[in-house]
Length: 341
Image 1 (cartoon, one colour):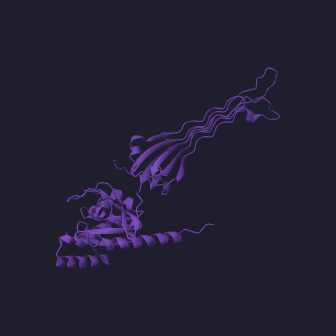
Image 2 (spheres, one colour):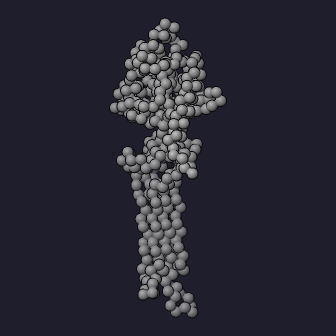
């Protein structure tokens, strides 16, 4: 299945049905009076978050969603039928943006969450509605109201507890494959990962979801490379794991490159809790490993984990600390939510 995380959609709600002008005609009733019914309401357009989807590719092939108009009113005081609603089924974590691609209409983050995107037009009144003591036989009815037509954008932000950051070929996909059942493409060349990957990680009887995105490069915040367009997928993460290639001769520069780019992308992302790990440590001798670890600790201002996805070294310690940070982040979020009876 192809991955798509941004698409434009055209929607239109249905117009209301016209009211009916009708008069009662019975054999033995000379002046039956008005009996025109109201028109039915037009169909609404909704968006609903559903489980089992992780891409917006379906909206690449169907971009127009138009609800039908309500049925016109009829004689004998019969109201027209309300048109059926149209519902856009989107993955959990989808943001709905206005046409300007900036104004957020809704953020669907829980299964079954729904939002009304375009309300159907109300049906018009039939001539029965206009009957009064001074106008016993009104000969007018209202047309139905028009539906709402608009253009929206759907932007998917995958929901994960932890996110992987690093330069291309830093070992992110190897790490994800080693700690989860995810099977991302792994190779010894840059930009092997072209789309985000999710994996469920288990440690000490607990599970959390980890996201791997394409690697960032210098200048990514200005549009270079692939990873920048996918950074939105780690914006929701509670903690980030920054992998630095231990075989690189420019470790501190590599570290600062990623920090600079994520801070340029978003202040929120730049302030997220981060763990730093030196990857591919199995390819280094003890002396080189010690030197590079100290250099990275000095650059990052904190402890640095030493790991290897291939040799499965240091993974348990990193996962336990990630889980602890995730739990701490969840507790903070819970404290921020006001209690409601």
